[in-house]
Amino acid sequence: MLTGLQIAVIGGDARQLEVIRKLSELDAKLSLIGFEQLDHVFTGVSKEKITEVDFTEIDAIILPITGTDSNGQVEMIFSAETVEITEEMLLKTPSHCTIYTGIKNAFLEEITKKVKRRLVMLFERDDVAIYNSIPTVEGTIMMAIQHTEFTIHGSTVAVLGLGRVGMSVARAFHHLGAKVKVGARKSEHLARITEMGLQPFHLNELDKEVRNIDICINTIPHLVVNAAMIQKMPTHTLIIDLASKPGGTDFRYAEKRGIKALLAPSLPGIVAPKSAGQILGNVLAQLLEDDVMKRKEKFI
Ligand code: NAP
Image (cartoon, rainbow, N blue to C red; front, side, top):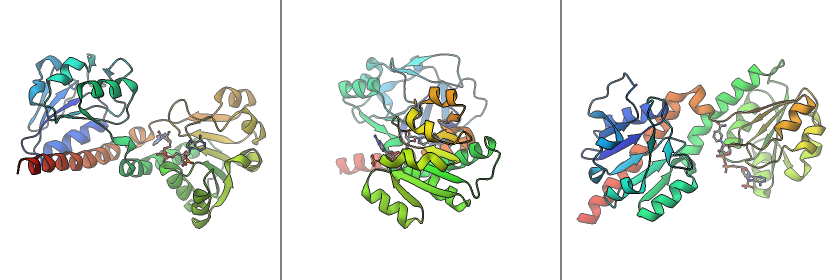
């Protein structure tokens, strides 16, 4: 339980509603900032303006998946107002106050370092990334169906990268009956791809491997699907780039060659905001409970 814990939830999208639901069920006291257009009422939860929050009482601050922009401004879809995270605000918090964000940026890293508060990046955690790969895969399948005239079953699919997302995507397309080949650079990844019953190839061989593919799914956040690779692909190839912005595809050249290439960010929030929010809510609840336990042990 999170009884007695005071948490400020600042901004965010529909995923944050599941986080709020979970934490309020666990009896945390929540201040919601940037939710005035939200009709739903949660018990033990108050909607406040940032100027009304008593930061001296706040044990944890939960930011949206995107964290802040480079000036500290927080994205809010349930509010017309803008909120900026400031040094002054964080300095008022107790020294144990932890700031949770989906992803970090230079602003958040610098400001939390300066005020000596802990910053936790949820999306850098393996558990969050693996759970999150489930709705990502479902969104990828949706895009493949929407943007092709052929079945996934029987098609040749190249998945680039065998990380948390690449592994889930490769396995799902394999189970749907696609002929899946996976490109990686580490020998242990090539071994794992073989063990999974898929066709491995080294990324050095990418230009040869793309010659017969129907779908290319990139999960590598670097420019791997460059003009030279796209030039070798059949013209009917669909490229779905899952890597974080700006992706790993030369979209300009793909368009020039008439190859459909789609950058597909934030699929979990699009195809399954409720599940994506529950993933974050469950992990946050565990992390906050662990923090409470650690602080209690310190005082025993
Ligand atoms: P990950 O576990 O870190 O996997 C990244 C993969 O890329 C690894 O196989 C890694 O191989 C490879 N890689 C990285 N840099 C490389 C390079 N320079 N050359 C060749 N291979 C390289 O990350 P993830 O959790 O799978 O996420 C992958 C990407 O998808 C990220 O950009 C993430 O933000 C994004 N994502 C998007 C969505 C969406 O909805 N579109 C959802 C979740 C995640 P090595 O081990 O050899 O480095």
